[in-house]
Image (cartoon, rainbow, N blue to C red; front, top):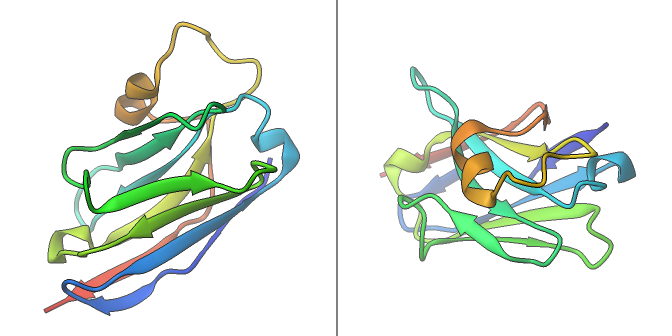
Amino acid sequence: VQLEESGGGSVQSGGSLRLSCSASIDATLSGYMGWFRQAPGKEREGVAIIDSGADTTYAESVKGRFTISQDNDKMTLYLQMNNLKLEDTAVYYCAAVAYPRDMFRSRGYYLRYGMDYYGKGTLVTVSS
């Protein structure tokens, strides 16, 4: 399984960035992918989850500002981040659930407890 993020960088507060994740086909088989982040000195947290039906779940802290989406072939995952805040500074990770997956686990479960595979991450720095 391969997941490779790109698009990180430095941006001023209020600005926008779009992250991309290129996924190998075996990363997409479960139909569940997402974005996680880890700020300095903090634990990794879920940001946004998307399933094969394009239904989404977001962390409360990013609702209305971030949008997760995929290409039609499901092999490229995006995170559009608008109105960025200082507290959004973190390393952002693309993630995927292994196949086959536990069918009783929801998007909310994955947002809270994480997924099986992660990329190496891309740094987003928001400054004032």
